[in-house]
Length: 368
Image 1 (cartoon, one colour):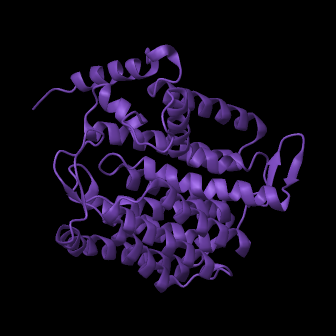
Image 2 (cartoon, rainbow, N blue to C red):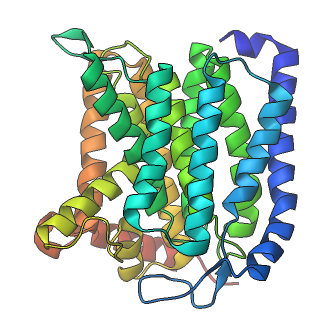
């Protein structure tokens, strides 16, 4: 809370946000030219929604914008070097994949190495708090496994949700904003610094990326954002020792987490390779239900905002409110599971009811 009472610090955070925002916004123009020059393009195919080739590698602007914002703030963190090295490895992996389309195993190695670096540096999930059991300290091997799964899982979750114009950058921004609010309340300055610069660079990129997109972030951006959010959540959320504190990061990132989890279950159920991409994610199902590109993205934003608010409330709630939030979260997760056809036998009762309500409200507005 002390951050609110330090006008100089608040001013620096605002300046860092503007640096990140403007740097990313301006750098996208030359990045687009470089991507076209070296043929780093997203080529349309039956799985993708774009109809024409779009420059990739826009995520490099997000990386550079956030970096300049952090260089201005210079926040202290004893393991900042290890975090930075991990980020560089992830960005290089993303750049190579944008250009050469790396095999899934190589991409996985490019995510595992940063995870190992962070774990050996001491950035890991040390404990979780459970009802009736209290704080449960994890053994070193278990900490290693859970932390690696979390970092790789969140990195891939943001990567997989990057399927529509403005989707990954918008969902990431909402998740980062939710974490930042909780970091403000807890006085975690380093987490605030990371969030504010990433939000600024994300929004600077989103101007170019919202439908119809002029550039895609590519794996350069989605892997970097996923890695950054995974690290931030470990530093800012898993360190909380409140009742059911370990659930907070899961709620914040529920949309990308469960979209990825449902994809794994769906592919395993259908006998498909888990790493093979498809066109059955939540955003694809919304498109198939008749929503436009922009409407689908805005609905996804709405889902993310709801989860973000629930997570903030969850971090400060009494036991009764915790149960209510858990119930609402379960309803939202069921809604997502129904969208991808894992429950309801394909009837999509929730989405059809929502669509009817949406169309009725849309029809009630007179045209000018």
